[in-house]
Length: 382
Image (tube, rainbow, N blue to C red):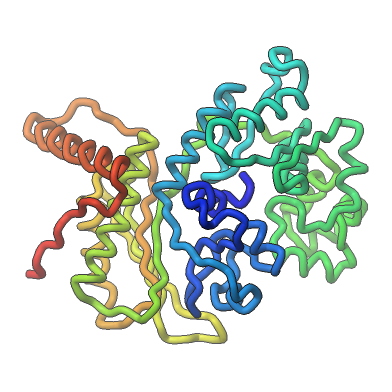
């Protein structure tokens, strides 16, 4: 999807259309989650500090993220994708791989299918999607990125090598800044340079993964689309405008994060065994660097209940903060599994039914009126 979060904000608020919109915080501690293409003209990019984005584009309009809304639109988009193939592998709320091999005859070919997919996404959501079509996942992803915004780029089998070779090596999915620096030290700047490099030398620099990266650089990618790919974790976190210590406001925030995570679990039919608390302390350990502490607790059985997750997060916080102030707090869950409503003891089953009924009511209220319309109370500290 093209500038997805910002595009949704512009879709919902006509006053933002055609404006430089940044989703995220504009303060010294805020971070850009995404920016509209109008803002990107000024150099604003995702993951950039909010204050830097404001310096580059003083007239940018900063909008707080609405993850529940983005997730709802993402589900709409996913339903459009599934009109073309059941083999859809989501990478995030705004990106997915589709294996269209078995659907080509229905639409007349890959380009015709991609054009129809773009048309239906726009018709049903009002948003634009950029599409890359290729024989492999890696090349399709790169083609989709290059074609933005609102683009379509098809790369045939015999065009892969010529397409990849001149591109910067950083275009390879997974090659981050650190690896780029290591490769640059070997005079490897393009994907073609990586494809031609001495494999033994690469292995000394990159380790055992070197042959994998070299094969990708040569256009060889045997990875298939996994429609049943299970997410490994779900999480929510917040960087504060001012440092926070223990108190009702902090504990309520942890419970709100937990409820948000639980809603996402229920939406996907998942449950989690492990709750993780993330704390970024205020004591600096270098320019822009702060200690990050994590604490976790694992349940005997997986859960999708926000109260249980929230209680665990608050318990972890009570035992970990030690009176210290923090600049960021986050709650995440892992140990993800399919929800199992199988046999359980009578009284436990009764409690689970009550729990499920309450959660369903909360989900309906949240979907209709927003996640802030109702919240659980914070029990008094004992």
